[in-house]
Image (cartoon, rainbow, N blue to C red; front, side):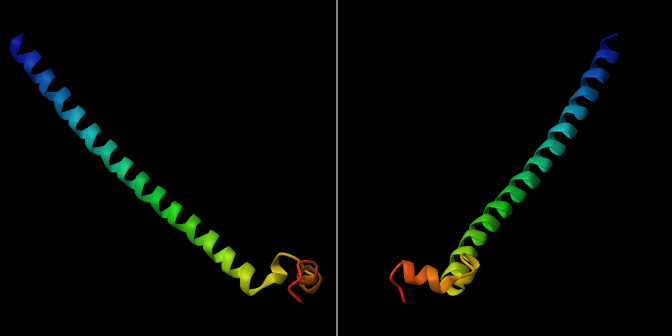
Length: 73
């Protein structure tokens, strides 16, 4: 009976080890994806800001009126 308990304990240890390995691998993948998404979000915000500076017509189709209202023209 002690041998059976030892075998069952060993198998449960192996299963727990494999589960931990898979869990850690998935969490690392999720963290990497999260970091990529954050970098993309920062890039998108910068890209939008540059686009607004270089192409004001994306904000307001009538950009000349918009500039005149803000005293730029």
